[in-house]
Figure (cartoon, each protein chain N blue to C red):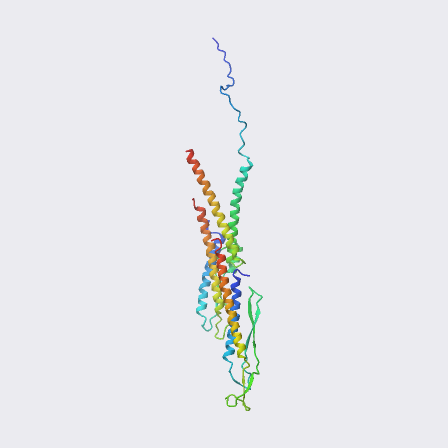
Length: 115
Length: 131
Length: 104
């Protein structure tokens, strides 16, 4: 059925997946803040998603890359401030994407109601 | 400016002020580090902040300046590191100015953390429009 | 015997009648046409609001949107317009059902 096939719906679903992965990776980074030699990992999907939407596709996978920021003397480059704020930013983005997805379902229900 | 740009900018502010705090802490812990006159004295670290023009903006550490390598030459003949004339080098660190910097770094960090809190509440309020 | 058949002439009514004049044309009434067009225009505007809101949502999650309230306001406009259209439709269906029940 074509109800949930639109580019925007699939794009929002991909964004939700990417943001959830980003939350897990941030938690991982914070847990490893004292591990020698550990490089912070970053989740990227926004650029790939923008390209896919321009070509009319919606579903795209997220990729995980290592951060190339300078390391401290124990080889660890996790910055607590950056991770904390990325966490807050991801929370807000997740809230936005959830609202947008819920809005699609709510619109359908409003159109279906007969009273 | 990205969608939640204030958070990224505050993050750069927090990082720079924390590095400042680290540098001041390093200076204060080494205020009595003695070196012999054949070496440089312990050099105080000064964090140089610079406006960041790429991305969302904010601040970045342009570099770390080192203080005076001459230090203060003090006559202490019974120190194990004293030279033939009895002099050793002490770092040229003014404790009162370091304490002032400590307070400034802390206040700067707190101000940026307050920006994070307010920005987060603002964005959450924007997401509540029309619900 | 032959019967002369007189052709039937027009029947003259015994009761006097009143001339009502030509009936007003139903098709081609410009006011009714304008009302129907405004309903269609409202549905077009609703489609426009929905697609704007969805486009801004996708822009927001791909990181191209500068102000988040642009998206939330567009979403609120679209959902309000949809609820209004649905309410009008439901009332129209209820009225039609009521009339049909009266005629039955």
